[in-house]
Length: 628
Image (cartoon, rainbow, N blue to C red):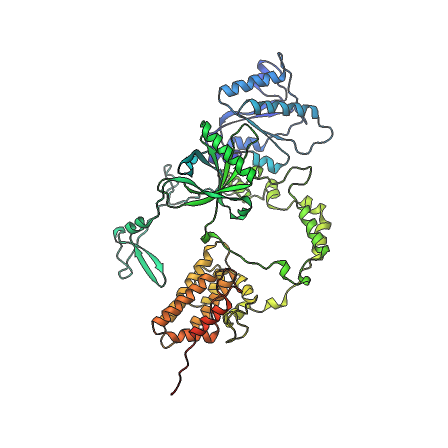
């Protein structure tokens, strides 16, 4: 916590008081007496490296529990109420984290219960809260180091109809904590220059292709967008004109059953809709709507433009969030995907496999036991890895190393902290305790090497035309698992473009990348361009064979990634281009190789039937000449 404050809260003031220590060191002991076993480790001051050093040498307490001393006048609760009233008057708040770990039978339960009761008084009478944690991992997560003030992303009307609007505020409920921005550092400045910023500035120059020595000024540069084989220039003024500029608003589109919105549809961060604070009518309206939706098990679909001039619109779902405390009801908002954002991966169900491929009763029981063993919330125990109390291990490790390097520039990377290991690695105690369950699962699901996979599937994919069982046979509908295996094979080198030497292999490598969904679209678009250029630039069909090879690879890739429309639309456009430009011989080659449209049997999203695919091939075949 203290390390992170050096980055996020370098002006925060921190003091450390230890309770339950063997020695006594505090001013109140000297002034009024009492307060034994209380030590002031550091007085309140701006957080610095000295605080971190002090905390690293923190002594352990010698007492299991710390009883609160009885006051001279009144009761302990009266004293807490007095302190709570002063805290409220001065706008102070307190966060209490109670960490006891596993208690033995000698623990004084009476004292612990009394302490918990008094802490709850603070929670009820002031803007304070108390959190109980049972593990070192939860303790690390509960120590908040960065308090982010809530900022609204929208304030305005929630329009249910043109005549009915509710004043609402929208906040972010969750937001990913990004890795801190790292800046480039230059060591060129003299070491004696105390005012050197060591900052690196980057300038870009654009030069003409015809005259590499000539710099092109900004007013002579223009953006270009690819459209098929050509690049279409669009000026900044034109780009600004075609931009979609909706009005700031939040509008209700309708309601649907909650079961219709799957959890995996949710995108990005979660927002929370609340009624405008202090607006009684808005609070009642939001509460009534939320409770009616909850009772009917409905969710609302809304269209949102958070700011005036915002260039995009989001459509999302409002889920009612009913409060059981003295807090107004609200809604959680999650962004839903558009059609272009959805990726469909069709996998066969177990029910489609023969019985020999399905788990038997023993295997199913072993799998059930394995899942139960790894339950994060077993009965009677604290749930492990709760999001509210689980810190990001990557960030925590970075901050630790950054603080270490600030004191010791040549320090080696330290081993992973034991607390972080509990987040990033399986619990060794749990694994040891359930070794029999794991061994039984391993025994019943024995893995063996598949000798069929040793053969190069990439070569099979390249040599095989369009999914046919044999070259020149079928309509490409005898699709089997070989193309899948071929495209799933990943390359050790991450290919980012389709080159000229091994275009099919480059295409397969890009299609198999899973670090971003953009690679599939990029691979398909680049392969389309290569095929089109080969057909367009051919001389007496000299490049047709390559184009057909690339087209077969594109077809198999679109089947695997469930992109039939991409291939079918391209094949139609390609054939139309050939017919209009006296290149009908290429269409005839398509028919001879059995390359046709992707059917619904091959890809579920396709709208092409077997008959339509067959007729497409027939249309592409050469018409026979009849003699007189």
